[in-house]
Length: 466
Ligand code: 4AD
Image 1 (spheres, rainbow, N blue to C red):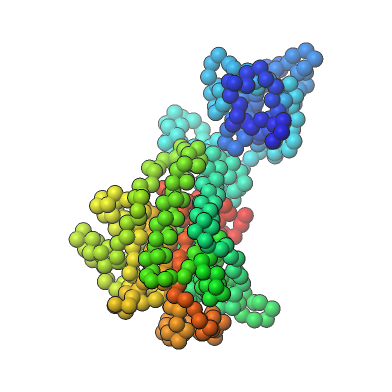
Image 2 (tube, rainbow, N blue to C red):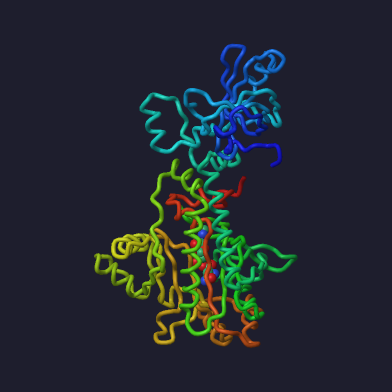
């Protein structure tokens, strides 16, 4: 950034040097008429700036101007770095800047709907403050989301979305290095891609259409188009009426589809290597961000193995049964059973990340390939972090007649997906893939309790703004 110094980089080694910095006015305090302290914040780092009357350099008017700045205004400062004798309370950087010039680049309104310092406090800090008799406003989730641009300025939120960026980055880097091609499939489609009623319907120039519930159909069609291995990072729309901590109406899907040579375990091999590489890269490259999240929302680092544990659905059901929870052998696991199995797996195998495969066919989408040896099960899997699903995947049916039969059996109007089914009539290799929910990965990696915390501008059944 040329002549500019980042607040993060202001350390003792710059003592007596002139610097040019930009930040937001986080706190302003006047000391009489000749001096003011201004805490400036940039990307979660703060430094105390001292505006003190000095002949020919700092006028009393300038001190007055600084004192009148509104919080969160953007300020440029030219000044000299100094090292004070005592530690500075309320600033992350332990040096000060003696101000020589000060410009207000953008003024914030005088009264903010959210106080950033309040919004950045952990539950423990809030409790302590209340006990100490401090007047403080607990900033609830809805208020945060209503004023999201302010809420995003807290160190924890800065960390969360930098971690989210790194998840996408690690996903892309790994898959490119494994010979995958990045694709972009249409989000406006004629028929539902996952079956079921949870679609946003719309009118497409007089034709019925909907927003894609996943890139499922077109990523498979791209395999028929001979790309061999593809991936996509894109928006996914679900109209389901789920008012839970882990469902959104729009989320970011990380999707993978690939040819299978012999067995669907090839797809699970990619999940395994991809996620171990991703978790390693988060732990290495996002240390500060993880710390910032942990300071507000304390969590334990994720426990994962170098080679990801794989259990069959039958084994999972047996573990639950042994622990006193009966599961319908050809049903699905409910949220509670998934959590419980997560705990049992952690106790027995020491991991919070694992794959559960060979699900009952009845509970999987129409395009899922049944197991060759037992048609009641399927070549499919879910993947869990801390007992919650982040991925579902499977080998797909690549035989068009069988695919059509399965779609009809699941009550799907095959006319709406005829182009998809036809794609398999011109020769199609065996293939499989999986879909990951980006917001869920970040939520669960960081041990957070609500997916709205990891969606920049969440869309749920009650929210379409901001
Ligand atoms: O389990 P889902 O619905 O599977 C599919 O979309 C398949 N096409 C994937 C495949 O390739 N076979 O969604 C995949 C993942 C889930 O595991 C979950 O992490 C996330 O997407 N997900 C949601 N995230 C937020 N809000 C919702 N409403 C979600 N529904 C699914």
